[in-house]
Length: 90
View 1 (tube, helix red, strand yellow):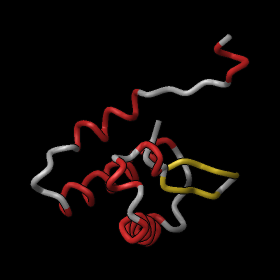
View 2 (cartoon, rainbow, N blue to C red; view 1 turned 90 degrees about the vertical axis):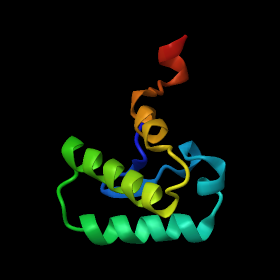
View 3 (cartoon, one colour; view 1 turned 60 degrees about the vertical axis):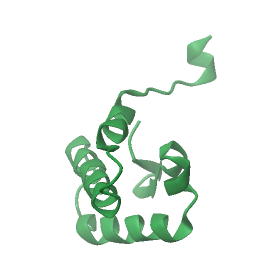
View 4 (spheres, rainbow, N blue to C red; view 1 turned 30 degrees about the vertical axis):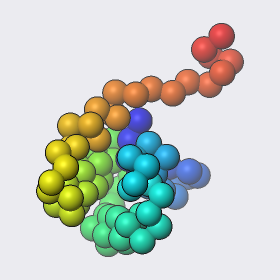
């Protein structure tokens, strides 16, 4: 699972449902993250490396905004979460 997901070909979205609730439910914070990441990565080829860089950029942004909370390891751990279709799981 990544902090940025492709919702349709070429369209990326912040995967806010997997962020801590106090981050994911903050519309101004989500917009700030999306704007910053959009500026930094606009025009870049969509690849695994680019998605990894986006994840790290989001983690660094959040950690710098909230230095009193050490949650970068938690956010990086989301990469290990895998989601399968119901048909594949059963």
